[in-house]
Image 1 (cartoon, helix red, strand yellow):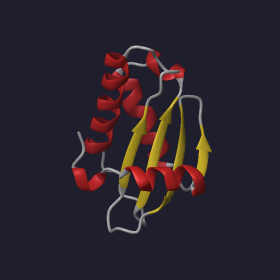
Image 2 (tube, rainbow, N blue to C red):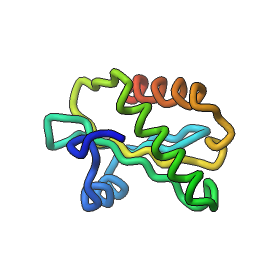
Image 3 (tube, rainbow, N blue to C red):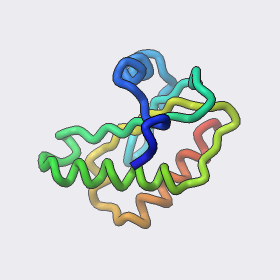
Amino acid sequence: MIPQRNRLEKSRVEYILKKGTRKSGKLFNLKYLNSPTQQSRFCVIVSLKVTPKATLRNRLRRQIYEIIRTSEFKPKTPQDIILITKPDITSLSFEELNKVIIEVLKNLHE
């Protein structure tokens, strides 16, 4: 799990979902804005549409948070980032998921 200081609070999540810049991919959507803090903060959303089983949703969420925590992702300006998963993501192994997420985070501003 990522530290509390790197997680988004609910009010900020709602604001980013309304006002943030959107990027779409095959496996997930990204919404992001510049962060008012000095650190990048994250939120991962895994809905019922991805999988109806709570244990699988929680496992996927924990895996994504672990990838973010262990990655060396440092944007030029701090970002508040929301990852919204799509159903196709359940077919990936942890290693494949790791590659995809790191690639997307590195190419965030291109």
